[in-house]
Length: 334
Image 1 (cartoon, rainbow, N blue to C red):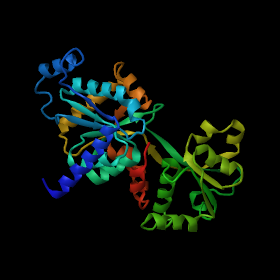
Image 2: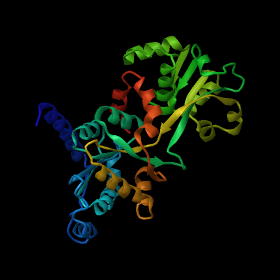
Image 3: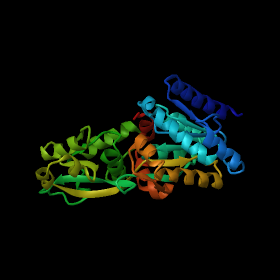
Image 4: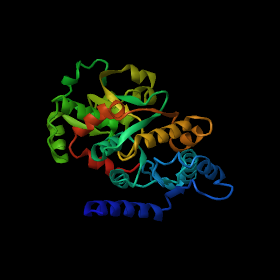
C-alpha cells in the first residue's frame, strides 16, 4: 500500500469510526441468516455468479446528515433491498461530512453514493466518479436559477446587474449564489480572482451592495422592500413564497442554467457490468416495494437514468468558476 493510499484509508476509517461512534454506521448484509435474511440468502444461492462483477461488501454512502440516527431504520431496509438484488453484502454509510465519501470514492472504499449537485461534481472532478441516476422531484430532475427584479425596473439584461444592489440567498445557495455568480464570472461580468478573499473583494467591487438574505423569501422581499435591486434564487421561489400581489410586482430578468437534483454516483473502478447491475437494482426503487423507502429517506418521486455532463454540466461549470467553493461545500453539513 502506498503512503498516499494509506493516508486516504486512514482518513476514511477515522471518518467512519466517528460515524460509528455516533451510531450512524449502518450495515445490511446479503448473507444474514434466519428469517430476516432468508430472501437475500436465497438470492445468493440461486445466482452465485451474478455478483461476480460487484465488490463484496458493496459500500453505499448517503448524503451527510446530522439526522443520521433517524434515518437508520429506513437506510437499513434499503441496504437489505439492494443486497437481495445484488447478491452481495451491502454496507450503508451515513456520515456527517462529505470528505470520507469523496476519499472513499477516490480509493475504492466507497463504491456508490447519493450526493447533491455540488459534491457530486467535486467527486467527479477529483475521483473520476460518474453519475448514473438522478432523483425526480415533481416530474423534473432539475430546477432553474433566476434573477428577479421589480416589474418597472429599468434593467433589461444580465449585463445591467453590475453596479446595482443584489440579494443572494446564502454563500452556498445553489440557485441563490453559486449558479448566478459562477455564470457572471464566466461571462466576464465579475472578476472572480483565485481565492475566497479575492472573490469577496470582486463582489464588493462589482455591486453597489450585497445582501446574504438567508433564503428565497428574504431575498425576494429585499427587492420588494427596496433594499435590493436584484434577487437570485429558484425559478419557483415567487410562486412558493410570495402572495399573488407580491408576485405581480416582480419579473424574471434572466434565467441561468439548471440546478441538478441529488444524483447517484459510482466509483470509476466499477466495471460496466457492475454499474449496470447497480443501476437496474436502484431503478427497482421506483416500484411499489421500493418507492416508500426512497420517499421515507429523501421525499422524492423516484429515480431516472442520467449522466454526468447532462445532469451536472451547467452547474459544474458555474461551481468550478468560484474559487474555494469546493472546500466550502464539502465542509457544509445538511
